[in-house]
Image (cartoon, rainbow, N blue to C red; front, side, top):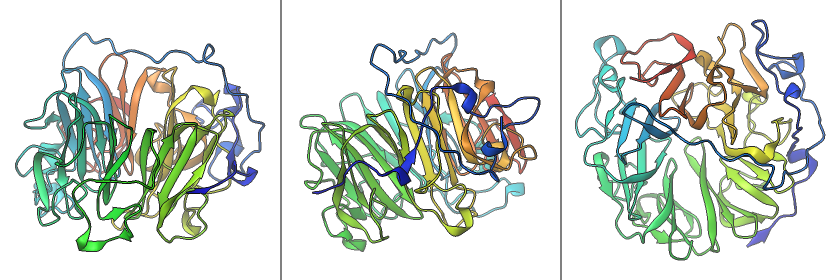
Length: 446
C-alpha cells in the first residue's frame, strides 16, 4: 500500500457551524452573498470541531400513511432513478436505454438496455411513470450506475443486476449486452453492500469485510483488461479488510474505487485515486488516515472538515470537484451522505455534470454546482451555478436519501414519498410525461 499524510490545505473544504454562512434563497435571490454565486470567489473559512456522538442528531425515520412507501432512492448520470419500497420491491423510472430509435416527439422507442428492469422495450413516455422491476423482492440496498445499469442487494446477501452490460459490469459476459430483468451475480459470497460504476461493480463481503469486484477495470489485476476482463467477481487483495464502506466515483468512462477501511483509513485506486498526480490507472490503492465518511470524490475527515478531490477541466473549473475552493456546510459532522459528480460523458455538455450534494442527519439537503434545468431547486434564470452549498429549502428538512443525474435530482422523504426536480427530458422526474423544460419545484412522483 502507498500511504498519504493528512491532506494539505490545498485540498481543504472548510466547514463552519453557522447556517448564516450557507447561502439560502431570500427575496428571490438564491445566494445570501455574491461569494456564493458562480462568478464569485471562494472564501477561506475556519473549520469547526467534529461533534461528539451525543451532539449528532439521530437520523430521521420513514413514517408512511400510503403505498408505495419509499425508503430510499438511487440514481446516476444515466438519467434514470430507482426507488426502494418498504416491502422490498424496487420501482424505476426515466431513461431505459443508451440509444433510442425514435425521437422524443414519437415517444422514444428504445433498443432495450433494460435500465428500468421491465423485461421489454420501454419508450420514453412509458418510462416516465415509475413501475416495478420484474421478479425482484426482498431488496435492502440499491446502486444505480452511470452506464444504464443497476445492482441490488437482497436480504440474504445476494446481488442482482440489470441494464447495460457492455463491459461486464453486471457480472455477466459482455456478449450478454442487455439484461432487461434482474440477473444474479454468481460467484459472490453474501455481501453487506454493493456499488456499481461505469465499468466495474464492487461489493463488501459479509463474513470478513473483504472487497470483491467484477467488470472491465479491476484494481490489482492490471487495470484495464479489455475484453479479457474477469466479469466474474474476484477478491481484491490490494484493498485490505475489514472495509466499512464503499463508493465508486466515475469520471468520463473510468472508475475510481473508494473504500473506508477500519481505523478511519480511506483507500482508493483507479484513474483519480486521491493524491494521484496523473491520469494513469492506479492499481495499488493510495491510503490516507483521518477519514470518517466517504462519498464519490468527497469525504468527511475525523476533524469534521469536508474535503473533495477530482478533475478540474479548464472549461468547467469553477464547478469541478477539484483541489481548490471551499465547501461550507453547517456542522459537517452531521453529514450522512456526500455525492460529487465529476463526469464528462460523451453525450452531455462538459459543464452539465459538475455538481454535488450533501445530506445532513437533520434531513437538510444541500446542492451546489451548475443549475441546469433547475436541478439545484432554483429557477435557472435566477441562478446559473453556485460554488457554495445551497439548501433545498422547499423540502423543509425532511430528506431521508437523495440521488442526482446529469441535470435532475430526486429525494426520498420522511413520509415515504419521493420528490424530483430539474430536467424531465427522459421522464426522469417520474411525472408520466417528458419535456424539454426546466422544473425547479420538487413534485411527488406518480
